[in-house]
Amino acid sequence: MTTALTHRIHSGPLGPGAISDSEFRLFRDLIYEECGISLGVEKRSFLESRLRRRMEDLGFEVPYEYYRMVTNAESRANELPRLLDSLMICETSFFRNRPQFDLLQDVVLPEIVARKEKAGTRMLRVWSAGCSTGQEPYSAVIALLESLPDRDSWMIRVYASDLSFTALERAHAGLYRPDQLKGIEPHCITQYFRQEHEYYVIKESVSKRVIFDYHNLKHDNGLRGLDIVFCRNVMIYFDTEEQRKLVGRFANCLVPGGFLFLGHAESLQGLSTRFAMLHRNKGIAYKLEA
Image 1 (cartoon, rainbow, N blue to C red):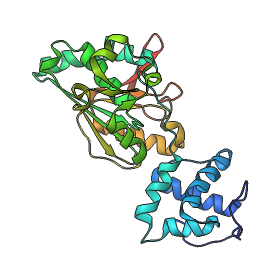
Image 2: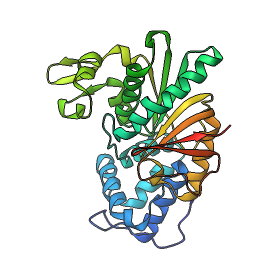
Image 3: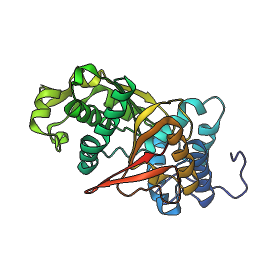
């Protein structure tokens, strides 16, 4: 990690376009080393706007002064997660990319169920990596409950993690506006949500099956024996090397024959040879080969 300046640092207040090239590189490298997110020059204005928010909250005018605070041994543990939180783009929805959930319910789940019943177990373990405000893990639980034979006899555990504490707080609350329920079948809204004033709250029958936790995808979280991993629209923020490492960690988390779901603009091409692609209609998943 860079700890000293090798180029002249801009010394004025942070205004539009005021961050210097050196400051941009310092923050870019810090963020990459901490969480693997790769910020190219095209993301410079985005980074500037997010830095400005944190600096205004803390009363800083000079970017390098804020950088020193973020990397200071005493304040780093508190402020760096807040900076990373401010960079997160929590764009999600229930049953986002519906063809993937159709693939899950119609093809993936029956295969997993057959394998589980042959082994004499009824435990399903899923990880929603980069869960944002909770719609993905809750969608996964609803999809499983709607499709599992004799569903009450199954134990479902969905581990949901994110780098944003703000998103995790909202996810754990399970509170959503009516317009956020688009994509959910009406009978599922009735069965899995309760209305409180102008909001809908996820019912305990779903929420009790989801475990939320903070996690940095740059590191192994120790999960093993998973049947399914969702990591959608996250790898696009990583460079090829970090993507390759992340996919390797997912492979280690999954059981042989487990499934990985990525975003519609993401693929494993050039990243791993351990998975076989499964395709149906417009839904795609990757199966870890034994």
